[in-house]
Amino acid sequence: MAQIQAPAGATKNKTIVGRGYGSKGRCCGRGNNGQNARSGGGVRPGFEGGQMPLYRRVARRGFSNYPFKKEYVAVSLSMLNEVFGDGDTVTLEALKDALVVKGVETEAKILANGEISKRLVIDGVKISASAAEKIKAAGGEVK
Image 1 (cartoon, rainbow, N blue to C red):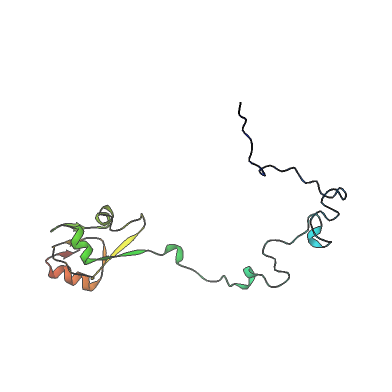
Image 2: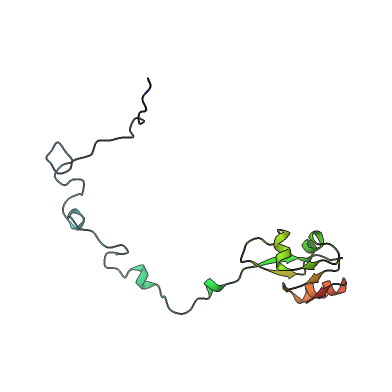
């Protein structure tokens, strides 16, 4: 009957240190004396040997607007021409349903790359001035 065994080298006996020459010698693998050889020895995280540590060298003043930054996905007019039909309303939800814009918190901005031939109604989506002109010239509307 087969017995399950650990692969060779997976289990090792515990090393007993500091118990004579038959074990891991006098210094127990801690090198010769010094701060790190003592029990409880060592330095705190971030200590750089007395040099001014990084967390104190780097300035941490002022306000950062980074957590509140909005990400805008650029949507071209040629993409709208492919995805939407004549007379459709383009909203952020419609762009997400068509998988033009992905992500929960993403915003979109329509840019004037490409040409548009369909009459679209843009509602609640940021749009560049030149893109708005092209949409109005094609008979569309920007709300």
